[in-house]
Amino acid sequence: MTSARSRDDGSVLMLVPAAVLVLLILGAIAVDSAVVFLAERDLSNRTAAAANDIAGSAADEASFYRGGGEIRLDPPTADAYAARVFSEARRPQGYDDWRGAASVAGRQVTVTAEATVRLVFAPAIPGVSRTTTVQARSVATARGG
Image 1 (tube, rainbow, N blue to C red):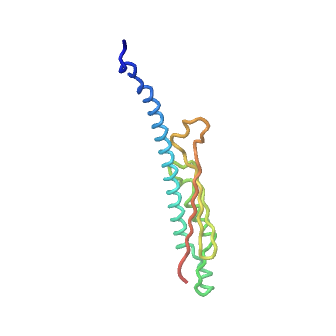
Image 2 (image 1 turned 180 degrees about the horizontal axis):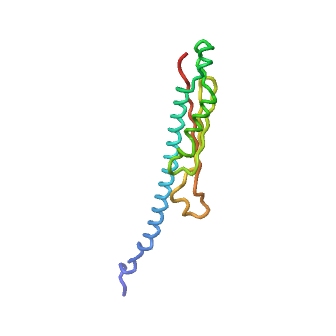
Image 3 (image 1 turned 30 degrees about the horizontal axis):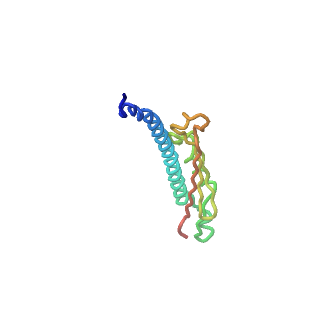
């Protein structure tokens, strides 16, 4: 006669591989989510810095002196600065590509950017994209005048 204990031996062993697989999948999702979140924060910080720099340095001097001290931003200067900031040579590691642009309205500048980020674990899952796109937008206003 077999004891009740010997019939139950090994039943937990069948659950261990499934539990390990579930933990690995959850860990992979957490890592890829963190990569996307950090890329969004990084791009947001870069657009905020660019907008701040443009608002502080792209003043149209001609309109300032002719217009009685009114501050207006120079769109070509803003475009050139944004093109320099978001050039391919300055692309951070982890981004497959990125682009950014600045638009000026009076004394306000809006910098928008978009980047494609490589995921770490998602490519191992069939049918899932290897990359995702993150976007950021920042606005700055020149003061004074």
